[in-house]
Amino acid sequence: MKNSHYFANVALGAALIGTGITDAFAAEPTIRELAKERGRFIGTILNSEWFNDAIEPEFEEIHKTQFNVVVAENEMKFDATEPVENEFNFVKGDKMVKYAQENKIRVRGHALAWHSQVAGWVSSNYSGQKEKLLAVLKNHIEKVVGHYKGQVAEWDVVNEAINDDYNAGWRSNGSVWYEGIGAEFLDSAFVWAHKADPKAELCYNDYSLEWGLREGSKASFVVEQVKRWKANGIPITCVGTQTHIEIAHETTPQNVRALAKALAELGVTLNITELDIGFPKGEAGKLTAADYAKQGHLYRQFMDVFLEEPNMGEFVIWGLTDAHSWLDEQQGKTEALLYDRQYKPKPAYDSVMASLMAHPATDVVSPYDSKLFIDPQDSTETDSTIAIKAVASPASLSMRVSGRTLFIAGANSAKVEVFDMQGRPVFSGKSEKGSVELKGIAEGIYMVRVRDGSSSLVKRKNIYGKNRVASPSRGSFFHIKKRPSRFSEGTLERNY
Ligand code: 9MR
Image 1 (cartoon, rainbow, N blue to C red):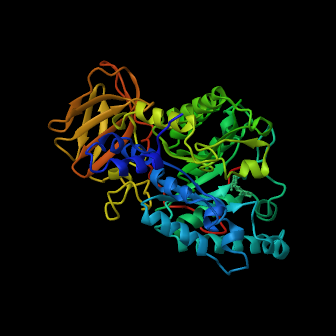
Image 2 (cartoon, rainbow, N blue to C red):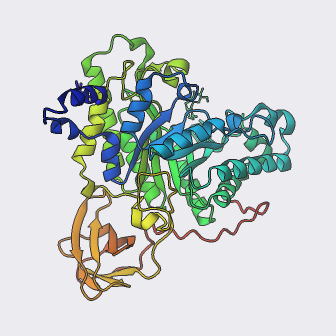
Image 3 (cartoon, rainbow, N blue to C red):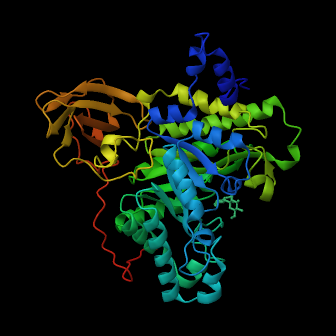
């Protein structure tokens, strides 16, 4: 386990000022610095104790030093934001957004349409009344997303709407939304959220997505729904896999990799949104160094997958310290986080750092390529709360591959980089007079990035051998042209 960390560094660093030997400490990076260099967001929740000013001072110091994305544990949920019909309470959410802005931390909003933590008045007043419930949900989404427009980069628009059967389908029991409205509450929620903040990323978030893409699984069901949403112009941009797992769940990182690849085909980002890797509660106090090393190994594998898959953007852990975790309060699990109960980094912390170090920034593709995804009018700073735009590609720049030649229109001389689907660079060069030979690349599908000054374009391309001609591209990777929505409220076309 590391024996030096933030506080140790500060204290020792302070003691060494004046001796001229502070460089070694200045050199130790934080998770957020490495995440930022890689164009990614790594973070954790602000626990409810933080909102209530009932948390140790170490918490916030570590939080803002180590992480660059944040989520409210409970304070942006329906029951917190609209406890009384059409009376909104943004006090706690605003407190977090202010903190995030002051510390240049990206904000995830959690969660808009969920069957749990809905204010009691919804079912007492409107249970089973479709039109009323639609109006309630619409008003809630418009007011909440509207309030945080431009400040919350991404919303969990729908949370946990899939049932836990072995043959996954929509959760039909215990959901005031599904029971009263039917499955179109999901489509509507995305459309309303997009209208309220067109630049926000919009996610479908759920648990047990880490159990693989077998037939009937939640993950397969999500992929099918995302296909339908995309085909129907529903503005979904991301899926969140919560990933609350146990130490024995060794196959889960590779299942997450498979899900990322399936979603990449659909031009959708996969985010890890609530990771924790718990030990059975009975083992508390008996855990050995080998147990913690095993936990670290699993964290490492998740971080490896995260950094290697080009369509993964956020890695959020559901808690910072084992001293404050929903697992201890509500589940038979414990000791699942990066920091122990005394705020000392665990081997899991070292493993996350080791993974980041092993994946240099030049090898990590960012789905938030600042030039491609962020509206130039907003900011060039990725480490910020500015909303990400998943659609902009400069109209003037385009590319096409024929055999091994990449033709670029809109730029005479552009920087060209090619990455394999693991995000590893396989070619780098410059185009001359609008074309470049892609030498030394095996046949296959690649991500091609072209940059010219402030313009940048990323597309997925088939690269063929000399004598074959490329088939028309099946579409770009993140060049998602959001079709103008064919949907107006009340006329949503569904395909379930
Ligand atoms: O951590 C949250 C805990 O404090 C709440 O009591 C609980 C109530 O549902 O919600 C926890 O957070 C959940 C998250 O919002 C959605 N995914 C599962 C999380 C853990 O239950």
